[in-house]
Amino acid sequence: MIPPSARVEPRELARVWFQDPRDERFHELRWRGAREVERPFGAFALGYVKRLLVESGMQRPSEEEIATGLARLLHDLSDEDLFRDRRARREAVRQAVIA
Image (cartoon, rainbow, N blue to C red; front, side, top):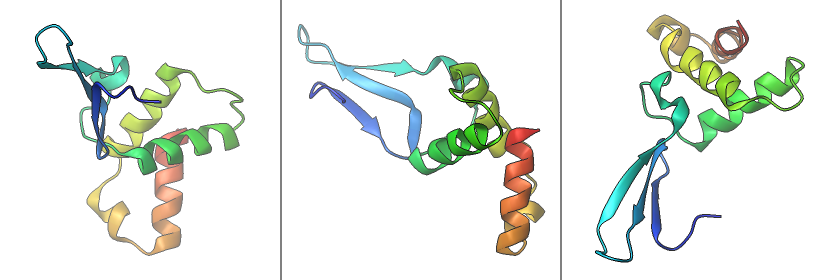
């Protein structure tokens, strides 16, 4: 659960902001895995990567494995992969995450 003093951008989950009660200013906190994942991602991408990792045999993917999966999903897919038909796109995404 996100505390009331925190803010999240749903399409950019690698960063959250918290409000310091002393000066009421917001400060950015970056996810440790953000170094690998250079592009913004939302809850759908995060959930999808976690599901693919579990389906590939990982019972509880580590933060590092999730970051690597997200990086592959967001970086290794070509535009051609993303614009093919749904089945081909789904398989390209699956291969990129699990590779």
